[in-house]
Image (tube, rainbow, N blue to C red):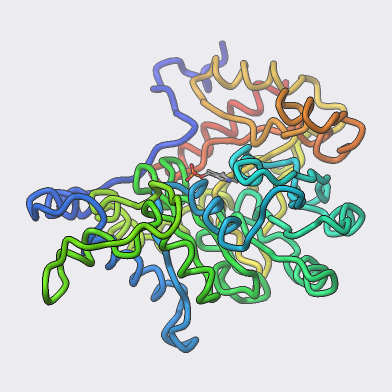
Length: 395
Ligand SMILES: *Cc1c(COP(=O)(O)O)cnc(C)c1O
C-alpha cells in the first residue's frame, strides 16, 4: 500500500455536524426554562431567519414558519396552495424522495422530469414539455446548493398560471441573480435543518412565504388545525384554555430545544458558508487534471451554498463508480451518492411506469457521480487526503 494512504489515519466520515458551546448553552437554556416545545426560542428563530433573509430592508413582509422537517414544510406549502387529487406537480427525478412524496400525501400526482447535465438542476425545457391542463405547481430543487434556473421556471409558471414551491433543502445560503433563495418570486421556499444540512437543528425546517393566506393556512395546519397554539394561550393577557379545531391539521411544529440549536447555527451560517467555499475550492484545485468532471461553480450573483461536492467520473475513467466508492472506503474516506434518481426507486418506477431512457441526463449522471465529504469541521488537509484517495482509486 502506498505510504500516502497510511491506514493510521482515522476514518473520515461523509458528513458531521458542527455543534459548539454556544449551541449547547442555548439548548441548556431552553431545557432550564421550563418551556421545551414550541415557544419563545422558536419565535426568536423565526424572527432571526427573517432577518437573515434581509426582510427588514424588504418591507418586513416575509413569514418564516418553523417546522419539524423540510418534508413537513413542503407538505404544508402544497396543502395551503390547495394541491389535491387530480392535480399534477412537476419536479426533478434527481432529488430525495421527500420532494415528491408530499405531493402523494395530498393525493395529487408527480410528474418527474430530467435535469440539465451541466448543473444537475431541473431542466426548464423538460418542465415545459411536461405541463398539462392538470399541472398546478412546479417544485425546483436547488441541487447541491446551486440555484435552479429560476428565471426560466418563474416565467413558465407565470405563463401557465402555476405555483412554484422551492425545495431549498440545500440552499442556505444560495443566491440567484444576486438575491438570496428565500427572497425570490416563488410562492414558498422550504429549507431543511436535517443533521447533514448547512445548518442543523437535528431535525427541522423553515417554510418561507410572502403570501399571507398561505402563511395563515400553514400555521394552522402545522399544529392540529387549532386556531391558537399552546404558547399563544399561555402568554395571552388573560390565560385561556379555549381554542377551536377548524381543520384536521398535522403535528409539524418545531420544539424550542431544536430552535435553540437553530438560533446559534444561523449566527454561524455565513462563517460556515465561507468554510464550505474554501473546501470546495481546495477540492477543485486538488482534483484538477484527473479524469473527473468537477461540479459546476458558483458565479457572481449565483452563490453556491456547497451543501454537496458532487464529482463525476469522466468518460474513460479506469474504474466504475461503485468500485471507486469501495476504494475510497478502503482508504478510510466516506462518501455518498446524491441521488439514486426517483425513477429508479420501486415505488415511483412502478406507479408511473418510469424507465431510465426517459431521464437520460439524470441516469448518466447517477451512474458516474460521487459526493465527497464536505463539512465545516474538515480542513484543507482533509481535502488533500480525500484527493489523494481519489487519485489512488482512479489509478
Ligand atoms: C434533506 C432534504 C429534504 C428533506 O429534509 P428534511 O428536513 O429531512 O425533511 C428534502 N429535499 C431535499 C433535496 C433534501 O436534501
